[in-house]
Image (cartoon, rainbow, N blue to C red):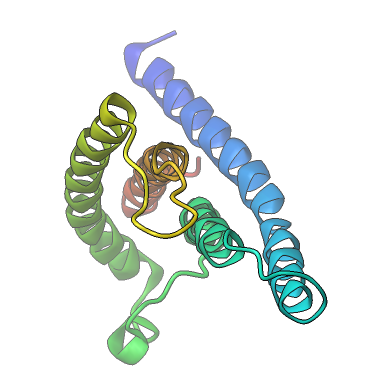
Length: 174
């Protein structure tokens, strides 16, 4: 097998693996919305029927953060991310692929910076037992680990989309 064909099959396998993994994570992440609703219902009920729970607001924030971050790669894959459609909608698929490939480079840089900061922040939270400064005082490392994991997934998905855009530019099918 020539090197070019081998590379093409490797890229196809990478795109397929990343897309399948992020699709499954995204579909599972959708159910976090029900967890969030349950927490908020419990919060409302506990204020009326029981003693108010201190943990519900922050837990709802953590679940929403996980929902937002873990759903990002899925949204990108499904084309549900926000685009400025003023000009984009009128462009040819080839021009869109060029613009998407170009902007993907900026996205990857941004995600790299976010991951660098996130790993440092997570390391700090683990090393010093960082807690939130509220009455409940939850540890911060679990949500920071989820956020770093989601950023890695977003980097993988952005790379997958970049590979697909490059294939579209070359009029090749992955």
